[in-house]
Amino acid sequence: MCDFCKPPPQESTKSCMDCSASYCNECFKIHHPWGTAKAQHEYVGPTTNFRPKILMCPEHEMERVNMYCEICRRPVCHLCKLGGCHANHRVTTMSTAYKTLKEKLSKDIEYLISKENQVKAHITQLDLLLKETECNSERAKEEASQSFGKLSHVLEEKKSAALRAIENSKNLRLEKLQMQAEEYQGLLENNGLVGYAQEVLKETDPSCFVQTAKQLHVRIQKATESLKSFRPAAETTFEDFVVDIAKQEEILGDLSFHSNGLEIPEINEEQSRMYNKALISWERPGKTDSADIYVLEYHKLNREEESATWQEIKVCSKSKVISDLDDDSSYAFRVRGYKGSICSPWSREVILHTPPAPVFSFLFDDKCGYNSEHLLLNPRRTSVESRAGFPLLLGSERMQVGCYTTLDYIIGDTGIAKGKHFWAFHVEAYSYLVKVGVVSSNKIQKLFHNTHDVTSPRYEQDSGHDSGSEDAFFDSSQPFTLVTLGMKKFFIPMTAAAPKDPASRILPLPSCLGICLDCDKGKVGFYDAGRMKCLYECEVDCSGIMYPAFALMGGAAIHLEEAVTAKYGEYHGDI
Image 1 (tube, one colour):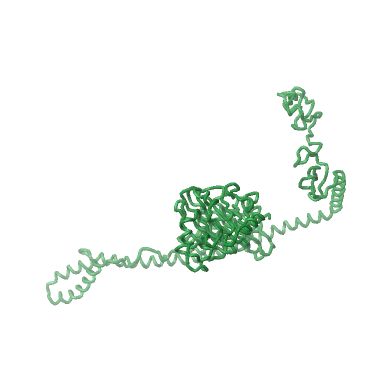
Image 2 (cartoon, one colour):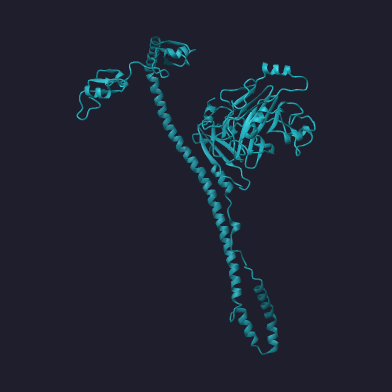
C-alpha cells in the first residue's frame, strides 16, 4: 500500500529505492516533482525489499565496490586501489572473493554440524560447571560471613569493655561528688557541722567546752579552707574515653578480596605528565591476569590537613586525563586493579605538581619577522628548527675576524595583556645556542632590527665571558627579557644578585622548560617544567602586549609542549 496516502491508503504502483518508500501514482508525482533532484531517484515496481542491489563504496559514495581487499577483508572500489588507503594492498575480484568466502563458510558450517556430539558434551559440562559455581559461591559466602562474624565478635568485645570502663568511671565519680555534696550540705545552718558547733557553744562547763571545741575548731578550719578554694572531687568530662577509630576505619575501607595473582599496577612517571590537565598512565609489570577495571585515586597535598580525602575515578583503560586541578599545587596519585570482586593492593603513590599559573596556548608566528631562509617551521607551527644552509655560509664568508652571525628570532602568534600565564617547551639536546623569554609589543621592531643581535662575547647578555660590560648592557640596551640555553646547559643571566662565579650560574638543561609571566606584578620566571621548580626569576616591563620570544643560532630546535586533551589518554593507550 502507498506510504503517503491519507486513509484509506491506495495500492502502490512503484517503490523508490532512494527514499525506501512505496507510492501510488499521485503521491509519487507530489514527492518527486519534475526538475528536482528527487526526480532522478531510482524506482522499481512495488516492493518491501529496499536492500540496495549494488553496494556503494563508503569512502567514494558515487563508486560501486568491485574488488575485495585481502589485507583489510572488505569490499573496495577502483579509486581505493588506485590512490586510496588500499593502494599497496593485495586485492582480488569480487567473484573470486565470493567463491572463496562461500566455500570457506560452507566448510565451517559442515564442520560445526559434524561436531554436534562434541557441542552437546560441552553443554553438559557447562551445566555441571553452573551447578559447581552455585555451590562454590555459597561456600564462599559462608566463609565471608564467618570472617565478618569474627570481626563483629571482636568489635562487640571491645565495645563491651569500653562501655564497662565508662560505667565504672561514672560510678566512682558520682560517689566522690556525692560525698563532697554531703560535706557542703553540713556547712548549712542547723545542719551537720554548723548545727553541732551551735550546740557546743551552748555548753556552760569550761572543761567540757574546751575538750570538745579543740577538735571542732580543726574541722571548721578545714571546711573554711575548702570554701576558699572550691574544687570538684571528680571531672565531669569523659575525654579520656573517646575511641579513636581513624586507622581502623581506613583499614576496613580497604577490606576486599586480595589476590596474589593480580599484580600491582605501576604508575609510569615518564608517560604521566601535568600541564593544562593531568595525564596519569600506568602499566602492569607482568602482563598477566590483567584487571577488568582500574580505580584511580588522587588528592591535593595540604600541610594544614592531616588526613586528606581521596577522590576516586573508575577507569577501563590504562590512562586517565584529570581536569579542574588547582594551579601551583601538588597532588598524590595511586591506582589499583579489579578483576571481578578481587582487587590488587594500591600502587606506589606518585606526586605531580601543577603549573604555577593557567596554561597559555599559542603557535609560532610565521609572519612577524620570521626568517624562512634560516628557520624551518613544521606545518602545525608547534616546532621550529634553525636551518644552517648556504645563505648562512655565504653571509659568514663575507664577514671578517671578530664578527659573528646574528641570531634568528621568532615570536608567538598570540600576546598577553594581563594576568598570570604559563607555557612550556622542549629544547633539543643537540642545540648549540637558544634564547627564550618574552618581548613587549613596543619593542618587537627593535627585536628584529637590533644592530646588537650578533652573538659576540661583547654583545651577549650572558655569554659566559667576563667582559666587564655585560651588566650595563643587560640593564640599558636589551629590548626584551631572554635567558640563554645551549649545549645541554641553562645559563642564569649575569645580574647584581647572581653569583659572581660563572660555574655556579650554569645549570643542567631540563628536559622540559617553562616560562611563567605575571603581567600584574611585572615578573617573569623560568621553570624546570618537569618538577615545576623555578630556576630564575626577574622583573620585566609589561607596559605593552607581551609575546613569547625565541632565538636560535646554528643547529637548534624548539618544540612547544602539547596540551593534554580529554581523548589524549585514549589515543596514548592505543599507541
